Image (cartoon, rainbow, N blue to C red):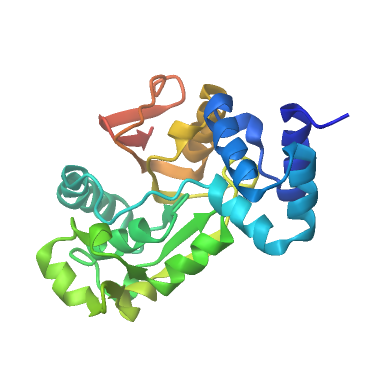
Length: 258
């Protein structure tokens, strides 16, 4: 008997440790069905066999599953608030050796934006950001630090001139910014979370998760923060029950562990 979607989810978890049950089913199933159709195999069981034996197809599948829409300084007003309010408050509370985690960092736009934002307040050699993502191919792209013009459109002009070099149609971020970020693989739904962070940034990722998975991740982020630490989320997200899970709200996108 051919696999149904439930059996497919189990096979994918065994193979990748990615739990498809934590994603909105209709949306994810539609994406996967389109990929299987494009791959020229008949159904879930055949596709699982294909990605077990063909490493390029396996990598393609993981990349396809992880949503990689990113840009520097996405939603500039929120970055302005980070620059003018949040970073000065964090420095006042914790000093300049801040522990910062960019979770689900995609192609690196966000952690590199964080380094540039922090560089206005802290010497570059004192900045260290841990950036994590589920997809190792995306992490390799992030480490390369090469971006198109659209990705960097919101970078402030002075920082663009200082930290980017034009190479053909692309822009390469400087090695001095890259050196401040440590990239690692991490699965938000499965892996252990680090502790005692002062700022965690995870934006426009949890919209793809179920409400239950979202709540679980927000609670884990809370536990990852030091008291007084800040969680910065995306403009498409909200923590409706933030008081219940021991957050205070600075504004719609910044929550403080109380």
